[in-house]
Image (cartoon, rainbow, N blue to C red; front, side, top):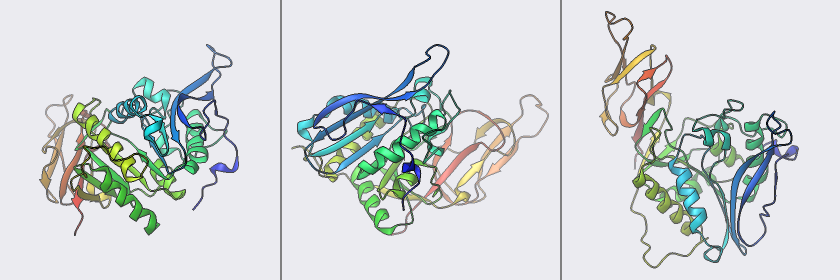
Length: 340
């Protein structure tokens, strides 16, 4: 399956040569004319480490600007990885939605664009749509594997996991599962809920790419242990793709606990606006009908709190970080072990 995004060329410019051997660290320039700078550009960082022929790994973070562990792991990889270590190519976007990353917000402060709902993008669209278009029309066609590193951001906290989306092509699904196991996270999730082409991993699969993701922590912090886990996983991915050789002290990653998010019943949403008191912790096991938490009304203390309940059995992989909620905010979601 191919998208129509490539039908019009990108307006983003760069001095990066994706076919040149060596390490290049530069920028993608996106024209952005404002009062402060009539002929200005948003300069999105990009790195390419290439040596000879071979497969291409495309690593991305900062899809959402308030998700930090992946951003930290990728800037460290850019500094550490040497061209002579590589057989093939590694393309890295450490802060893909740069305006959001610099503001520490999920969406762009310029156009309120959520990059992970903007694919395949538009060459003539908003800032966020133009970034999506460049990734979809220029970078995806260069890649053999894509990994989009996320976390829970400011509003959610996760048991850290790597993930893969379950798509429509069994061959791509099989390659994705092999890459997921090679990454070596303690927990791995197969998403069966989102097959929306506006999402970066699903858009990548439309280009025939095995496409990994992950939620590596959250709560608006940077967890050093999770950053180290992501760094190991990225190196494992490069070994799996035969882009780098196994280091002398390399050991195969331990088996990962493979889980899935099967459907919308795995999610719990706030029924009313108020102050949410959770009744469970991350990594708890719950059953359908169990209490997830209460919404309290501190402006009307005589009103009884409103409960919300789980709609299925499962493992609490995610819970809300912020206490204040609006009706419809996700307050928790579950995952289930994959049979067999």
